[in-house]
Length: 342
Image (cartoon, rainbow, N blue to C red; front, side):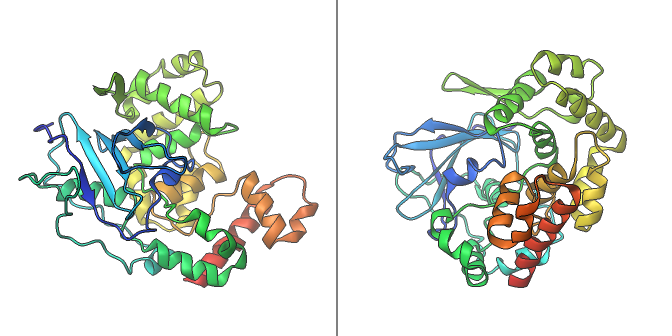
């Protein structure tokens, strides 16, 4: 940790429609951002409520909000911050579907400050880079929506109501264990479990507005011999064993093994992930999509199954359950559509 970052808002300028902060953070990709009240003219949601979002990213506590008038993203970092001046962006092995969106590249110049933001000598570029990478802001989402709408009339009908929903680029460790918690679960319970992981096994960073914020636990903490019992006592059920055993495997392989999966093809990546306990096809695909740079992957759950049978693959209406074979057929069919578009 280094210096204290001045507690005022910093702006990352975005074209309107490139990000819907609230819908993205509530879309079931990530489970630690908290919705908080906001006393600014920015951050207004549909019901007129002033809101912002607070959570932990890159071992720092951030508050995010969005100016709904122009779409800009604003952030503030609380308490001690890491010295990120030497951080270099993780080089990704991009897949075809992402290349289409790389028509809009945010300016490399430092973002301007407006409204309540004040000019200072802080070098925000490293922190801007963290946010831009997390929300994948170098992807031209509006262009993707245009192309998808041309290729799919069903998508075209709902595109306007889904504008600005982005796939996050998460830390693979947090993403993996969060989705092991997702097995036969709902978002509320997943959120509760991930919160318990952080408070019981993670490091406390600081308290903001009487709320404690914790770093997601490292693999060593989840691999301890008594971790499974502790998690069972906390209500994780059979997932406790999955988390503990997968953490032990990761500890033996080295966490770098997980990050290195960003550089290999999707099928091989999925197969590698399925060596871990509690990681089936859907969980593996969620991790591939949300943290391992496989943007053309479509995780298939019951909702995707129902949408596919209703709009794209009517023969599936005869099927009563989502088998491995049907899972592959749906994933291949929807992925094919995406690849045709690109």
